Image 1 (cartoon, rainbow, N blue to C red):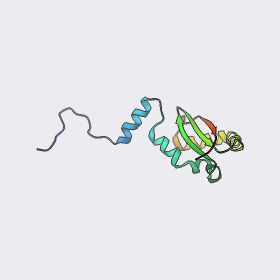
Image 2 (image 1 turned 180 degrees about the vertical axis):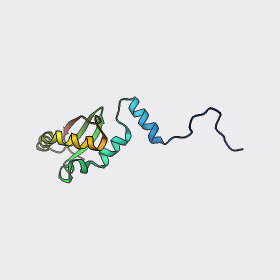
Image 3 (image 1 turned 60 degrees about the vertical axis):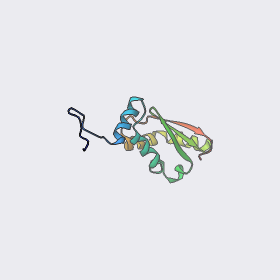
Length: 108
């Protein structure tokens, strides 16, 4: 006998991404799709040269935490912060990432 949904059941199975995004929002974290975009398209946001010296670590609330490989690069990223945040807004939408938090140390 085939399984049938019970009367009054919801719309049926949903993609895991939908459920994961709802859980992430409930925890005050960014949606999984936004995290995925930042990590996968980092070189598009900062350019190849800066991507070779930096790496996104995590999104903490509305702060993007970055690893930078030396203090001079951290200074350069701070100088470019407004431009980088504008690019992230284009990619993710408004208010998703509003600040950068830099960690100097090995990128890998």
